[in-house]
Every structure is written in C-alpha cells, then in structure tokens.
Length: 328
Ligand code: ATP
Ligand code: LTN
Image 1 (cartoon, rainbow, N blue to C red):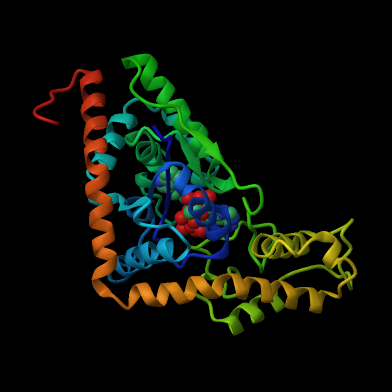
Image 2 (spheres, protein in one colour; image 1 turned 45 degrees about the vertical axis):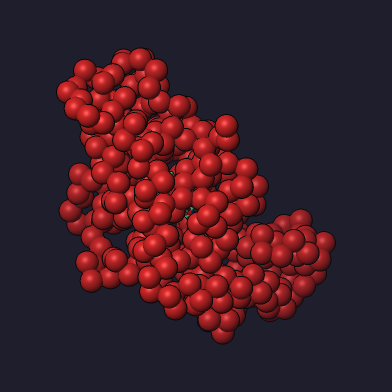
C-alpha cells in the first residue's frame, strides 16, 4: 500500500512564488509515489476576516492553481476542507485533549494575533484544525514550507497525547521540507517571510503576475549597497533572489552569477521566474475557461476521501467512548 501524503493552502489571497516553491512544486513532484490529498483550507482562512464576496472566487482560483502547477486530479484528490464535516468534527475532539499552553506558544499565533484588533479564538485553535486535517486521513507525510514545522510538531504531540489517553488511533505524520525554497522571503523586506496576506505591492511575486510586473517587482527588490554579486558574501536580499532563481532554473548557480552587477543579476532572475510561470499561467487560463471543470474536480476529490474521513471520526469517537450510530 502506498504511504499517504496530505497538505493544504489557505484561499486567503493570491498564491505567490513562496507557495509554489515551498509547497505546490513538491506536491506535484511526489504525487505519483503516494496516495495524495491536497486541501484548500477555507476554514483556516476564516480565522481572520475574509470578504464573503471574494472568498468563493479565491477557493476556485486556488484549486485551479493547484492543477495548473502540476497536481493531476486523476492522481491526487483535491478537496475543499469545509466540504467534509470530519475536519471540524475531529478538530473539536482534538481540542479537548490539547492544553491551552501548547497553543499560546505557537509563533504564528503570536505574530498573527499582533496584527488583529480583536483576536478570534479560531486563530488560537488554528493548529488544532490543522492537526485534524492531517490525522483525519492518517497521513504519513506532510510536505510544507519551513513556517509550518512548528505546527507539525504540535500535530505529533496532539496525536501522541490522544493515543496514550485513548489507545492507538492516529498515525504519526512526518514533516517533509523542500531542499530549496522552504522559506522564501518578501522582496520588499528579506527578513520577513513572503506571505499572501501581506499588503505591500512589491512584497510577493504572484503566480498570476504579468511578466512586466514580475520584472518590475524584482528590479525594485531590496538588496544591499554592494555593486555586484559576491557569492562568498551575499546579503539576505541577494540570497533570497538567488534562491528563487535557482529553484526556478537550476542553471542559475553561485558560479554563474558571481561578479554579475545587481541590475543584470535581477534581470536574469526575472527571466527565470517568468519562464517558470509561463506554462502555469497558460494552463490556468485553459482550466478557468471551463466553468464546470473545477467543481467537478472538487466533487470527485471529496467523494474519494469521504469514507476515510468518516472512518477516522468513527474510530475517534469510539475510542473516547462517545455515542456512535451507523458510521457516526
Ligand atoms: P497567509 O499569509 O494567509 O498566512 P501564506 O502565504 O503563509 O498565507 P499558506 O496558505 O499559509 O500561505 O501556506 C501554504 C503553503 O505554502 C504551506 O505549505 C507553507 O509552508 C508554504 N509557504 C507559505 N509561504 C511560504 C514562503 N514564503 N516560502 C516557502 N513556503 C511558503
Ligand atoms: N497552516 C497551513 C495550511 C494547512 C496545512 C494543513 C498544511 C492547513 N491544514 C494540513 C499541511 C497540512 C499553512 O500553510 N499556513
């Protein structure tokens, strides 16, 4: 039997090159080796306010970008988290075994809570819902960017605590980080992680950005006061551009960029990014020209994983001594 992979992206904005290099690219590469489930985690997105007029469009756009980035709906199940009630149900059951202190320690919670006027309790529960996504499907491997490593550790702690309290119920998931691109930084500030919900115009390279926009954003990216690339001593802005360039085009190596003036170096990186995104954008346009296609993919994905989700919810309830009727 193939090992199972599960991962997710929030439909909280427009996907960027960090999401691609840190997550989607690897998902596409490993999908045939595993039984893969990729989620559009809309219940996570609403832990901070999302405009209801836009959210549905973002959910469909995210699904289309999964496919455009190489996730094959025949190989992998693409599912919307809120379409399977087991995610919320299991999240509640896991909440009851999760100490408050574990959640208050999460660095992403602390960072996101700082940006909100009112901190919803969903933001605190966010990692429990993520643990539920993973444990619901008894996933073995979770491919994510570096920012999610702490949430994955917490997932294992929750699974362990549940298993020791109520008996072996959940598979222990392993974290899988990409070799290159696990943490892409913002172009405007190479000390901050590139993020969908950051607002600055020059912060992120969108997967759907026009070539001209990409050129402009990279040309304006924050670097340092050196005139040319010194591969022995790269500042954080140059390291970030180099990482993006190398992940998009392996012929961009430290040797190949050494001594390049920053202007020429940036042009070379922009070229590599544009060439990498061009086929993804083309495929995205094809996919979205058929209005029914995405809904069909999401329905097939849901139907495929539903029995497994129901089975885990039933087992979990039984382990806890709750009332189970039919399949629960
Ligand atoms: P938000 O700003 O709304 O929190 P985000 O840009 O951080 O969104 P997520 O939906 O939280 O994106 O993440 C989806 C996947 O992309 C995760 O696996 C995450 O680790 C990865 N990822 C996100 N940002 C980066 C980044 N800057 N570099 C590498 N991987 C990233
Ligand atoms: N919290 C993750 C998104 C996410 C996820 C998951 C990733 C939600 N559920 C399950 C892997 C597995 C993030 O990227 N911010």
